[in-house]
Image (cartoon, rainbow, N blue to C red; front, side):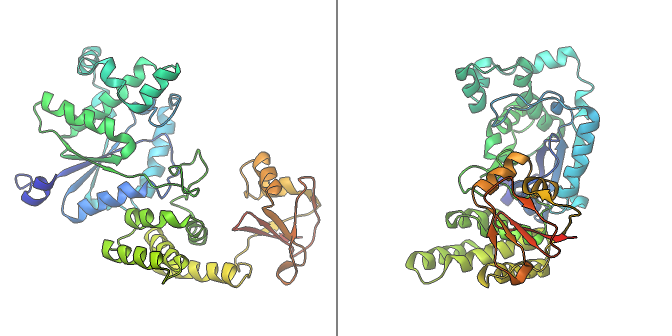
Length: 383
């Protein structure tokens, strides 16, 4: 990698590959870690190649999962890929990106081609992959088609003659398969660069939608800022490194000052949140979000942009929370209530809050009353 970057690639820009999984469409800021690295390569004059896994989506990749992922239809894959790319190009330069689809080469594959590809790996080698190994030891089924995924992803590198492939640390095995296949087809082995996965809002497990500990790339600036400020202090360094351009020397200085107690970690976190929100929105949006956050939490005032909720008749508190989109399900809403995370300001901003502890509570039609759900979500009753 160092030689390719410093000495060049025979006068040609490097072809830097990223495989895109089109089985989901709502990306988190965790995905942006790899996107930002691609952008760095672009700025150094190299070519980024994005591969839409429209063929492997029909098989399912079990990476990090205890069960195989269900296959998708071609329509679902195309719809997801389009939404994915819309978010992807908010960070990566569209003009400097080559977008390819696996169907370009795999639709031409014959059974003989497939069997030949299978012959380059043994079952024992496949079981080295951690998630396969864990499923095998636990007795969870592994379908033969799943063993094809690393080989197919690896063959993508052959088809595209990639020089470098990027991915999260959970993709190391698959990326290495491409590196191993290329010499078999007469190509130089690609270099691989893996990036650490950032933890989610709990500060422990990796960010993911299934764990409900994520921040969406499309989240409004205020919401994104608030969630970033809710992160445990120990996560700040990794977020700075993965999602901002703040230099290591300045981060070292932050660590020193926090260690000696000469600075409030909250001030560092405000900087972190502002830098990251600027990345996904704008500096003006980030500054406005910071002002709103400080106003709400430091001055103990309610936000100014509380959305209205039309209420024509008394309604159960759980129904209100779910219908307003403040909880994903009735069970989630009841859990929030049970944990003391729901309050009602019956007199609006001028009154005191009443904590709702009973999921059978009825919300009366009181124009201007404010409902607070969780730490950052509000709605204003409109009669």
